[in-house]
Image (cartoon, rainbow, N blue to C red; front, side, top):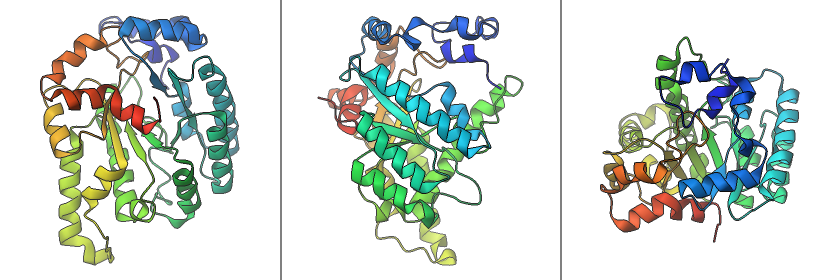
Length: 315
């Protein structure tokens, strides 16, 4: 289990975090329930608007009871819609959807769109016996494409749980992007991105430096090994990734320019991750200066706001 306070450690030093983690909900800032306070925190950090994810809800993706997962996600979506209604131009809510029951998942996705949410989270890693290449998911992909609702694959949202505890946090932290990478391999090789060219995915909080190498390796595997599985795509795997997969990052600096050039400057988005432990808040602008020297002004503008605004239809 991950202590609640771990979701509220943004302004704490590394030395303070172990003791901070014992505080429980007492560590939560008022902005967790008061959107007016959230806007003040945005202003303090120089942020114009945010795409907002669930925090503790991420861990619910590993619950074994699908009916309970669905009920929890339904309740969160109601809360997120109400919270963001305070200022829909600056608070961009992202919903949570259960897709073990595909028709129910489609219905909840449609409800999220009607509530004004801008996208949803799905499993970062689906059940092993039903990867995202499985045709059963096609009605959900079709609905997401028709609704233009981006689908986020976020750390800590695997069907089998996160596997991360404070006893193995260093190793667990290092393993978090791996399952997401396998999900994207399934989506590409399984033809999902080819069949649904308008479908949009976000790799959330998985960093971005791996994305150019992932594309190279996927292209190489496809070139040399596709005939073993009879896979025949119209485009190279990397072309589907660069067309339909966005990536977010927080602390990367020196590799940002290379990643933008090799992957796509139109598909990368800087994220503050506030109020979580992995956030530079309230010093985000100072941190951003550490990587913007590696890109031109146009790319900087895209990655610090333009790409997110386009993805989530923000004026």
